[in-house]
Amino acid sequence: MKAPLISTVSLFVASLLVTSSLRAEDPRPNILFIAIDDMNDWTGFLGGHPQTLTPNLDRLARRGVNFTNAHCSAPACSPSRLALLYGVQPYESGFYPFYDHEQIPPESLARYTSLPATFRQAGYKSFGAGKIFHGHNGLGEDWNEYHQPQTFDLVYAPNQGYQQGTSEKMAFCPTTNRLEEHPDHQVASYGIDVLSRDHSQPFFLAVGIVKPHLAFVCPQQFYDALPDRITPPKIREDDLPDVPWVGRSMVKLQDDFRFRTDNAWEKVHRSYLACISWADYNIGRVLDALEASPYADNTIVVAWSDHGYHQGEKRSFRKFSLWEESTRVPFIVFDPRTLPAVNDPCTEAVSLIHIYRTLCDLSGISAPEYVSGTSLRAQLENPRTALNEPAMTTWGRGNYSVRDDHFRYIRYYDGTEELYDHRRDTNEWRNVADDADYAKIKMRLAGQLPRNEAPLIQEGVALWNVNDADRPQRIKSFKTKSWPAWVKKMNPALK
Image (cartoon, rainbow, N blue to C red; front, side, top):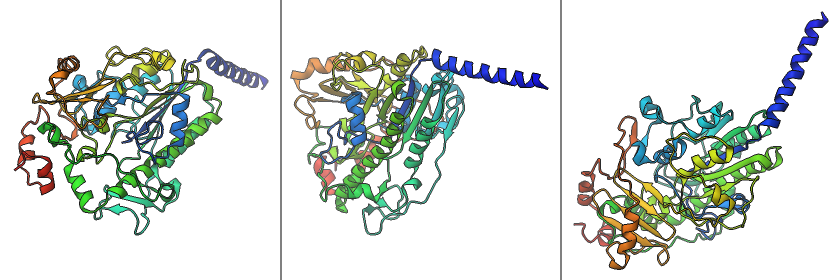
């Protein structure tokens, strides 16, 4: 009767030895991967708005490397996340517009391996929650475990905020629900739970925070923390006449018109700032849990937003453009194992496409050969290190923005152009593409445009809301639309 007991004890001891060996022999870092939806530079660490409250992200930016000139691969959720998570630019993959991830043909994705899947194949446990991919939260090869938050009906505080009719999407209001009934709070709580567990192998933990995505609604306390009056962004009334027609068609004039008509812009700005603070609060809960855990000294934290957001600049709302407000994003990397040589932000133009290779490099994992981008290890060790590679943003086939340290160059599918000198014009108010003094600069940046474009993948398209090389006829309907008088004033060619 004692033999089985001895055998069981032996197996238990052997298991402990194996676990101990795994911990001792696998020093690879854990990854805390924080994805944020629709957050622009209205954060403390980027200085985009004087009244923003983001103490937790600010603290992370001080500890790590704050990439102050970072840009998305596409100014929309779906193509941006497909590019980052599969490590391939839209003009290389053909994933230009929005896709229903579940409807993308398997053969179109078969050539790629997602970032969490690459880590999982390398021996990591992969955990996910919230919005990581766009419209795809299944397990598959990406995740060992994926958390789906519960859904509660959010109740808006009466007679506060702003809402267009009964539209749930176009609501800008404080909520009266318990914090725990909001999806982002549940997602952060799941991240905290994973960090509280005993892990015998390294982990890749992805926490997807949805706010400040529409609707701009969050708990009342984050509204109450803001000043009585909200400072508006700098806006030039006649900002569009020097913009080519394709660029003008990307402007969300209807939103601007509605907010102006309803005298609602300040309420929209307040709601956006409140939702940014709410996102920061939940990110802070996860960061606090990490610091209190045994994994704090061996966990790389990367925080990023999928694209920026217009708040009236260029007379636009939302994203979906190739201008600074739409492409510039928060991007922070903190590696506790290697502190930077100087405690400076990195001002190099950086694309989110670099995240895939950077995390693989820092973790001792070989990235798939096809993966685009460059490891940012050198910039993490010394933020002053030059990258010498501009950031490329694609919005529809044939429409591109090239952003370097001082300039933004845009070329649309019809060959029309924009060029902005950020040394003198940080608001991108003056298009100097036709200025002879900038001819050499324009030629240099134009030389960075892709020489080949992958054809559009049409299967699985869920939303295609851009004028591009595959739908040039849309520009005709834009020009002939019946516009309000103030729109015609800004666009003299409109009849």
